[in-house]
Amino acid sequence: MVTAITNGIEVSVEVTYQAEFSSPLQHHYVFTYKVTIQNKSTHTVQLLRRKWVISDAAETTKIVEGDGVVGQQPILEPGQTHSYVSGCNLKSGMGKMRGSYTMQKLFDGKTLEVTVPEFQMIANIFHN
Image (cartoon, rainbow, N blue to C red; front, side, top):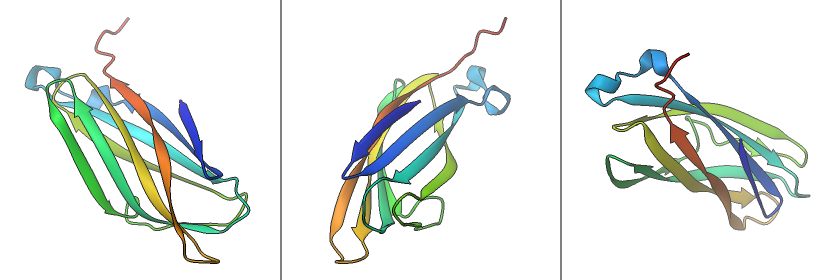
């Protein structure tokens, strides 16, 4: 698990290789990641947008942007936590992701960029 704190917002990411949904012979590797966002600030915030930078060892880096996370724009009061699970497909068994969330402080409307720490995706293709 990797963790970063920006402006009082803690973001932790835990990655799992999904061997049962992957096909290494077809260069298809599936990873899921669980993101936990905890508001350790004194302000209520809302997650508005996400930006991901996805690097696959087999191809160039791509950027994915959009509103919210998995169809939600959660509001987090001080001390609250929001978790979600999403996924990523790679053509190689190795890659990494990093990104940011655009959040808005509800009391004054100011936005802030919150770092999503870089995390590695490495396929465990060797079974004991």
